[in-house]
View (tube, rainbow, N blue to C red):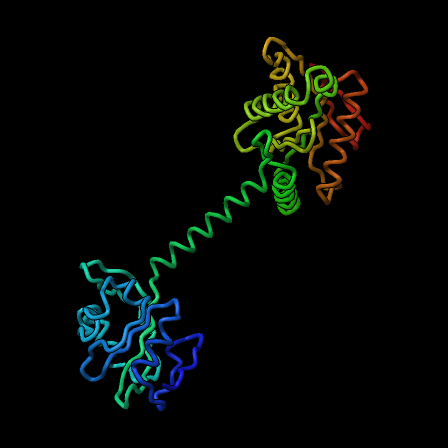
Length: 321
């Protein structure tokens, strides 16, 4: 027995070479794709590897000798028969044993088996391929979602916030009429909660703060956990700075209610710095720095307030409640 060289594509066999059925069957059984040998001009199946048997649902003794017309629609069979190139490709609905039709891509080439003309068919189940692609795509989307989600609070994380903020800034500079703001939210005296009640209680507070932030923003805005006890808000599609200030004060009012942990109530407040998009800010880092500076100004005034950064008129402007 002369070994048949395995190739990446079973249809790469030359029509000028002659191979035995036994050699080919042994070689093709190692391939993951379904491979059929079709005697020509009788158009009967003379060879089938294990993958072909599994795909079509036949035992080997049942499939060998079966007419190709039993598994291939007449129109596709006619198209392949009329094809005059050495290799033909055809998307078809191959018929399985129990009458089930499965979509498949057929790649057909000519070969000589035991000195007789044959077709070598490699059939790939496109439904299975699509299912695998969908599964991979779903896994990647889930991974991307998890990579962009803060594990503790379920809010978007810093990476996802940066991505959204970059898009908003690019749109603002392209169009000039898409005003938006960034709010930097930092909890006041959060370290005391961790020290007095423990980190598990601190995590409970952070989760509750995240829920209140999500309830306070408008549809289309984004609240994210930036890190530690810091949160960021993208307030999009503004008519003026007052819109951003209203969102900030709504957040402060939501946070004013104590967070109940077992039998203890933790008082939570925050300092909020707000920075409006401007043509002087060409990168998100500059915008975030302005919001961060405004937040520290709010803390220096005792916390629990929102401060708007306004470089055009004065370093800071505090808007009263």
